[in-house]
Length: 613
Ligand SMILES: O=c1[nH]cc([C@@H]2O[C@H](COP(=O)(O)OP(=O)(O)OP(=O)(O)O)[C@@H](O)[C@H]2O)c(=O)[nH]1
Image (cartoon, rainbow, N blue to C red; front, side, top):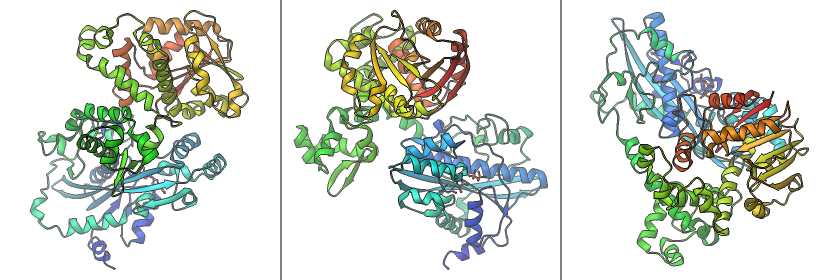
């Protein structure tokens, strides 16, 4: 066997697998590797938002797992093994990283996301070569990752729950085990099967061959770690809450961009250089506005609609159909392909599943109108971000040529087409998270709900779908309610939802067991938020509920990035903001609500539920 000689190279070495995964143990022992298993105690809680790519996150986690074991063993025995292998498997879908589900509800949320779609499985692997001399520990880390694309069939609710109840999903990345019952969910796989199961054996063997037959060994400098790591290094990598690269062995700023590739364990002790801290992440940030503008432009030109109807099309065909230059159109199409929105083949350009789902102007989960409001409203406001920061005021006059509190309403309700665009924007943005919000808590104990500012009823219909015994009232301004009928679905859930016109700051609120505020509190400054909560508190009966759907900020307010960006958006547009769970807790408690709980959905809204005392 061609690869066996590589494994043989390790026969005389003390090899440790820093993993509790039985699958990794099986894959490596079947390949003929002799090793000892020492599961890592590294807490897998690195900030995902601080990594430029999902695989960079997986590689860093794998590295931290292996380093923790190498250091712990060295400290215990004053002799580290020769090689420590760490691995981390994640599933990536539409910008989200899925790890092992924490419970069955989480497994359901993961598997229902994966249903009918293609996702990537990344396994990051770190091979740490250790040598201990004179009490010091010398660590040389090599890392790599492997990607496998997996497509799931459309999964029925029944199959989904039956699979979840089998217990198989709980210790597996993405909530499934391709090697067992989970294999039934998989329609197609492109890449290494073992990588999905938890260890990319083929790439690992190639990496070993590279390491043990290096073309130029002098190209791989080793760094001396002159003493046993200090006690706090181990604490940081061990059990303490919030441990991460900023607090543990791989010291330095935890939001420091990390370049994929080889890293030395002591790199943070070195002076940063362009080699150790490449500018990639900064360069990507510089290009952020160009990426947004390219997306806005492609949507404005309805390129995705055109390719759905007539694709695949060449750049020339597209240019002719939209009456644009061939060169410019080709550039824009190529950028969209580079961003994963289009596929480019010899036959021309066509939509990827991401574009089909979210970028068509009339799709069920269309974000097209939301994107257009970003282009037309947020973009001009963000052009005056420096003024907004300096002056601490909304820049409506500069951005829109209008002043006053109601600039937003003025701009959207001034004509019917603008109003419908705004309603479609809210509809899409709410709908993409509606199922996760509706199922974040068991709401089956409530019989009536009132969605205040519920706009098109996107969340109300989803709640009705999930809870057939629930009647939902959508309460919104008369000019919104008069057009809400355009968004009514055809299913039986439509019969459970009714619409009542009114202003939640002035009119009597409809009676309900459960009040809902979805994307409302982040629109208003604090005084208005208190005013609204106090009105709800007076209407809500003891034991009644309040469900708040907003993007939750972490307690340190530095993550997650989409929530941070939405918060800045709200400040710039309305002098309002997103909040952390503890901020919601104090707000809601101040208005007589207790038992405040939250579920992070990972989507455009998280869910907070409180009970009226
Ligand atoms: O199809 C499958 N996909 C994934 C798995 C298993 O999922 C886990 C992934 O979790 P992680 O990488 O964090 O590894 P752990 O199990 O927590 O072990 P460590 O001690 O190494 O952190 C992994 O076990 C995969 O094997 C699967 O079985 N099938």
